[in-house]
Each structure stands twice: as structure tokens, then as C-alpha cells.
Length: 461
Image 1 (spheres, rainbow, N blue to C red):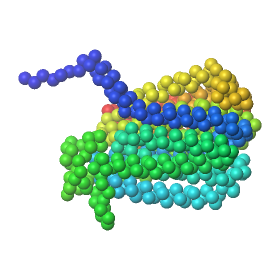
Image 2 (image 1 turned 180 degrees about the vertical axis):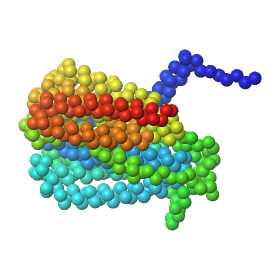
Image 3 (image 1 turned 45 degrees about the horizontal axis):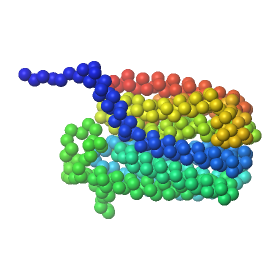
């Protein structure tokens, strides 16, 4: 007689708790790296706020917003690479040549963007209210370099190499902090600070390339021989890369590789649209303030940088959620516990941000930025709440893109268009601008949550 063990409620609870703890251990290095990078950004913000005049600091924040708009396709590349590598279902040697081709194409695109930036810089700079083309050129090329960097970061995510990825994030944070501060300290101005960002991104991309190649080798994926395009492998298949594969020996020499997933271009297009909309949602208020209210732009920049740190952290910890959701969804499961881990990691920093904005906004701005930047203190709380909502939208978006949902793209594009109109209607008034931003972001949280429910009801797991 066979006895089947039945999990007791207490045992099930303990299992869920252990799963949550395991997820926190996995994602913890990314969260630590994200917090450290944000701390470096705070140091840069505080020091440059004192080194630059208020108008110059507002201009720097405008260039920072431009960087994130230009670099938006990088997050889309992460989505496409993770989903594509996951689709190989335990055949890393087959994914390796595909990734090499993608990297070459990304490099060509990077060089094209650099040439285009130099060509159109004289026209773009005046449109942004800037008269130094060098700063705009450097920040645009830096954003394009970050997109190129994301090819290798996507490879690290797809292999669940979270500690290695965290190391690359720390490298980027340290280099950007050091080079931006050095440029500001020696009097190179906004253009010099932008050049520091560019150098940091190039160095970080070079390191990510080396890390990704080592990760391929550890997974058993050696580069194919010259002149061949074999998509089979006799290498051992890591368990972490084989969700749903019954036998580790399924991918052996002479056996045709599994059918390839041809959806990478569609994944990339959907992710580009979705994350471009997120970038607009994150930065449209700053860009509008720079145009409509240049005198208040510096003060608004102080609360903007402080509030948007939570969005940057959300993007970082989503580096854990994205591959977990993609891999588990393909295996017929869900990643709701991994979503819970991600939200848990965000909860503490978000609560701290809102508390500071609600209780001591003027004191915080005066201590960290100087008394010159307290004019927009009244807009701090609504903007902090808006960016907390946007961080939730980012997490939900990465989950839905990972599982192949497309309706989230429509919601985000509509939200971005609404945010652009609403913030423009505020005519450069900081409080009204932040309030309009909050209304749009809160509506998107509700819409994104409804889409999550719809997706999981459509496919019960």
C-alpha cells in the first residue's frame, strides 16, 4: 500500500516562507547594487547641486532625462534577450551564435547613433534650450551605449547570474559617480559631467562583455567553429536553464535542437514601445519644466532626482523578476512569488521616500541640496507618490512583457500621452505638474493590476 504525503497548512506556509526567503537571497545582491548605485547618484546630486549654478543644475537634470529616454530600448533588449535565450530550453550552444549576431548588430546601431548625434546636435540642442552641443552629444551616445550594454546584461539575466550582474551594476555606479564628480570639481561644467557619463558607460559595457562570455563558457556553450552554424550541443545542460525538460541528456550531439522561438522581433518591438512610454512617464515632467518654467527647473530637479531614485531601484530589481517570470511561464507555471519578492524589496525604500517627502521636505532639500532648492518643496510629496506608483508600474510591466502580454503596451502608450498633456497643462507650476503626474501614475497602477488579473485568469497555473 502506497501512502501519499499530504502537505499540511503549516507545512505549506513554511514552504511559502522558505520560497520567499530563497527569492530574497537570490534577488538581494541586485537590490544591494541598486541601492548602492542610487546612493552614488545622491552623492553626485548633492555635490553637483553645490558646484553648479541652479540653472546649470536644471540643465544637467534635463540631460539626465534625455539619457533615460535614449536608453529606453536597452530595457526592451533585456526583455527580448531573456525571452529568446529562455526559449532555447537548455541548449546554450544554440543561443550563443544568435547572441553574437545580436551584439554585432547592436554595435553597428551604436555607431550609427553616435554619427547621427553629431549630425543633428546643432538642431536638437537649441530645441532643448541648450547651447552646448557637446553635452547633448555625449549624453545621447552614452544612452545608446547603455542599450548596447543591455545585450550582455540580458545574457547574464537569462543565465540567472544575479551576483555577476550585481557586480556590473556596481561598476557602473562607481565609475559614473567618480567621473561625474571629477568633471564637476575641475570646472568642466555640464558638458564635462555628460562626458563622464559616456566614459563610464563604455567601460561598463566592456566589463559586461567579458562577464557574459565567461557565463556562456560556464554553461557549456563554447563559440561555434568558424564557418559553421551548428545548433546542437553535447554539453551538459544546467538545470537552471531547462524548465520543463524531462531529460538532461535531451540536447546531445546529432540530435536536432528544439524548435526555435521566432518571436524575438515581436518581443523587442512590444518592449520598445512599452518602455519608451515608461521613460516618458518618468521624465516628461522634468522636460516640460525645463521648457515651461526654467526658473523653477533647478528646484524641481532636486525633488525629481530624490523621488525617481525609487524607479531606478525598481528597474534594477526587475532584473531578477524578468528571467524568473519568462522561464517559469514557459514551463507552465507563474512567478507570483517572485513578484512578491520584488515588491518586498521595494517596499522599504518606497516607504522611506514618502515619509521624508511628507514629514521633512524642506529640511531634507535644504540639508542635501542647499536652501536654493527648497522652492518646490510643496511638490515633493505628490511627486514621491507618483514615482512610487511608477515603480509599481515598472515591475508589473516587466512581468507582463516577460510572459508575452501585449495589452500592457497599449495602456502605457495611452498613459504617456495623457501624462504629456497633463503636465504641459500645468504651465511650469511645480505643484500642479507633480499632481498631474500622480493622477496619471495612480490610474496606471490600477490598469496594470487589472491586466495582471486578466492574464492569470486566461491561463490558470
